[in-house]
Image (cartoon, rainbow, N blue to C red; front, top):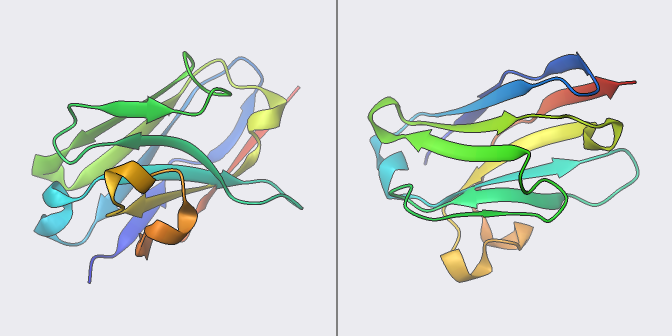
Length: 124
């Protein structure tokens, strides 16, 4: 069973950037589609971005499209979320998740593997 560990969260001013990493414990990582989600206090966990197993296709929520970039390095068993032009409303705990059916990538219930989350706080 693959384990996922996020890192790279922190406190940043509005307009700044952060890069989140998601390190996987198994080499089977390279066969998994990957997703990023976030959850703000009092809100449901929401889809942020996803990437296919080979990195050929990516998808983004409207709220982050053009500002965030999802990528992966299968040789390092790691996925990334580059977050630029951060806004206060991006403040949340960010989670990476693995192995959904690509057609169901927006649905949290279709991801069998999750990281523990990393806090991102954007100040004005």
